Length: 169
Image 1: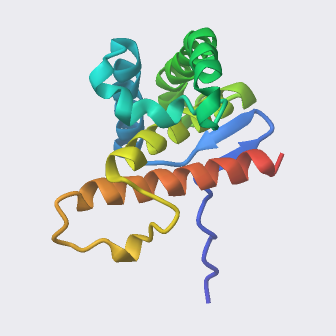
Image 2: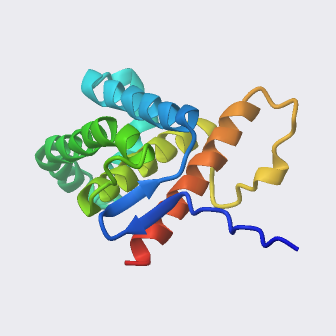
């Protein structure tokens, strides 16, 4: 009886870096979603502030610290945006080559991918109003946002796989 090969991990750590074992369509989807988030951040549109708010969590949570939090956001937001944009650009520049096995992701690029996947997932989770009690089995097939919920689950899966790959180091 022939032995079955174990399925390949989505992200494989090798001596040269991280190989990405995803289909071309999945890579294209990730790059597109990261690009859409990049555009949202660059637009700096007050109308999108509600869906990107989880990317810039408050440093101060008490009502009497509102002024301190406003000041923190004023001082740190540009740096946070720049960090996210750099990670997103790195994803766009390196992910296809890593998936082809030609050029595995470096540790730094893998962390950029983690940051970008998490950011896209946070924004999508905000759009879907995902909370602590969110369970994928509760989503009905006739839900108008069923596709977005499936996408959220896919991003969660990728994020978990990426964290596991980095943790195995």
